[in-house]
Structure formats: C-alpha cells, structure tokens
Amino acid sequence: MKRAMALSIAQNLVEEISPVCDRIQIAGSLRREKHEVKDIEIVAIPAMGETHVIDMFGNILESKKCSTLDTLLDFNLGQEAFAWEKDEELKRWGPRYKRLRHRETGICCDLFFTTERGWGGCLAIRTGPWDFSRALVTLARRQGKHVADGYLIHHHPKPKCGCSKGAGCPLIVPTPEEADFFAEIDLPWIEPVERAASWVWEKAKKRIFREVEG
Figure 1 (cartoon, rainbow, N blue to C red):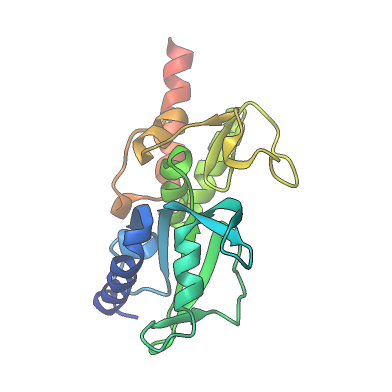
Figure 2 (cartoon, rainbow, N blue to C red; figure 1 turned 30 degrees about the vertical axis):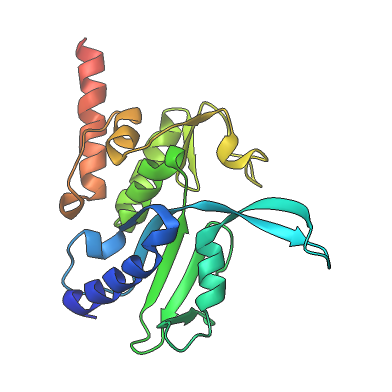
C-alpha cells in the first residue's frame, strides 16, 4: 500500500484510541518513511482504569485494574462504525500484542502495548527494520543484557517463560525514551529513516576500538 493511504489509516486509528492511551506512536515502516507499506505498527501505553464486580443489589464486590484500551477495543469490535476487526489469518490477541485488520483495505495493524519503563526499547524494536532490531537485541546480549517484550533487562539470562514479575521486574533498565535505550547499549541516537543493522555493528566496533586504545 502507498505510504499516504497507510498513514491516513494509521492516523485515524491513533486518533480513535489515543483518548484511552497515556502515550501512543506510529512505528514500523511508516515511521521510517517508506514509500510502500505492508502493514501498520503502533506502540501504545494503555491508560489504566477499574472494572467492578457488582452483586444483584448494585454493591461493589470486587474492583480490578484494567486497560481502558482493551475495554475500548472489546466494545468497538463488531460495531459498524469501527473500521477494524480481529485478524483471523494470524490470530494475535494477547495482553501485549493485538493484530487488527482494516475491513475496507485489508491492511493489518500490529498494536503493541508497553509501559513507561519499556517505551524506549519497545519503540526502537518495533520501528525496525527487522535486521536493525535483531542487531540491537544481539548487541544487548553480548553486553550481558537481554531484551524481552521491549524491556532491556540487566545481567540476567533470558528465562524461557518470561519473568513472573513482568513489567515490575527489578532487573529492568528503565528506558522511557528511545535515546535512553540506545545509550544503555552504548549507541548514539539515529533517525528512524537511517536505521540499518550495518550501522549498529559499525558503532559497536568503534566503541571496542576506543576501549582497546584507551
């Protein structure tokens, strides 16, 4: 799909769901300003609200925190005015990643949820391109860290089933901005349009040479 059309579709979705997000940004190939786009990627920090379990007399029995973005999507799916539906070809509808399909054009949107602690890492990884993101993950691992769900985690082997503490893991290195994520793995900031795996390894080699000379 041409960039202009995909960007318009993405911006309409962002406008629709941004009221229930603390932060939201278009990522992927649109952010890298590609002329042809295969899909849409969006990173969001959902706002949190409360849902109540109420008895027959209207008394609140239990209150639970919930993502208001999840609530909005669940409500809108199936509504004629909502331009999106669940993608039934590649079914992804978990707490951190949901895949939507635009009913009119068929283009898909990968919607990634994160938190303030993981915003920078998640946005960097989901902006791509794929080989650039893989290089970031590999470089982090060579430094004794690992990346999981966009979080940068310090000096700890990556568990197969993920950390049971999730976003509250004390080993997470907070990266509230992309520049923070790059800095934590000894890389300078680079504009999305210029990102490539070769750049990562070039900068990593220069750092090693500086350390040897020093």
